[in-house]
Length: 507
Image (cartoon, rainbow, N blue to C red; front, side, top):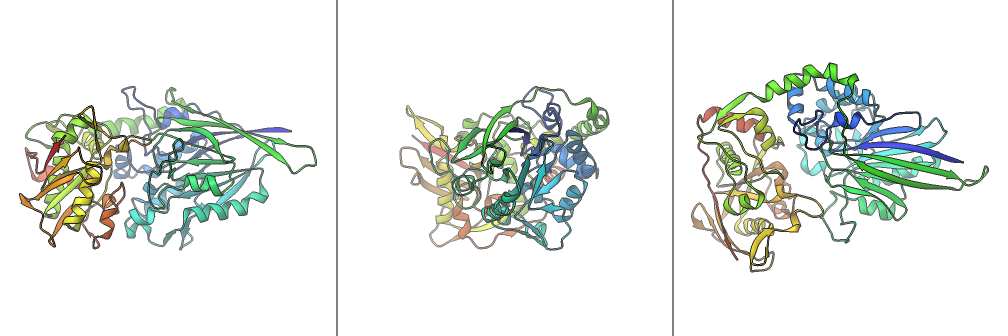
């Protein structure tokens, strides 16, 4: 007897509900318009839903998030979802409000609520119309504990992701015909080359493929497009972010004889760029939301002395980035630190002289908090060596290294510095390229410490900056980067953006 399970899967949508209007990419609503639901179909999501897009900030300001997103997910027919690391960014009560409003079930085996209030389960078994029993669990990267502000995890425990997945599999497997894990985490090794991609426990999908025997492992978090494939008996895939694509998966289960407990499972998939219009059932009630957000994003929040044009990626890294200069000026204004560093988006962006709210939120999309680290000269050099690895030489000319583009595009892990002038010799090996460092015009002194402002995300050492993990605990400042920029522009009419750092390349 052959029975079919159809799955639609999304992840890392980051609140990108509406189409962009410029024809680029997809959107959540366009994905929703292509889902075809019946009694043998499940619609699943891999987390990072309620943070990232300007729409999310708008809905929070209007106290409409719990009304809009859960209603859209319900009309799309979602059955289950897991939590992403960014879903914790606004604290326990905001998360609870969202979960309470969702009709779909939240599966997060390694999220423990000490108050017993959150509607979260470790796993479930769903019986389809054709009788197929489908076991599904969810887990989120346990690096949430490293990245998230402690107050946002009040009375919550995020336990070991791998062990939670193992336990969930052991518990649900005897009761089901197909096992699925929705993992908000990614691959620690390149699936093609085996090259190691990251340290620590942020991504453990390869270990799960090696040691656990789920039929289907749906990954997330890394924002990589990984076409479906079978690895050691488990089928796995990953999607790009923001609703640019969704996955359609077919799981075929063949029972080998009426009285046999043996079965075979065949899985295939497509990663699809949505092209549908907004579903008519949603368009009418969402139109006031779309129009309200559009007006809200057009607000002018301040003025600059001159516009900041978008710069190509290599140009901004070599010659300096005015957008990064603005961010670093804000960090130094907030903290009074000796130096500041900041990473920028993967795509070139700029700001008009009249700074609109929507443009600022696109340029600085994450509401990270500012912190100040106390660093030695050795730690500063190690961080700058990581920046120096952004470049390679090709035919004697600097190019962006594939270290930052394959298999995952991560230009945001190249940091721009203020208060620092340094020299990189690209003829030298990676790890030993920084030949001179000046802080506020003076050479770095042995034994002296300096203060360095950065995001709380960077302060955890993520992105190849493990050197920061040996620093004393960071001093954290209230508010977030987006709010700080708004305050800075309000306090500085016709704000001048001045380069406060300098990079010299030798090649």
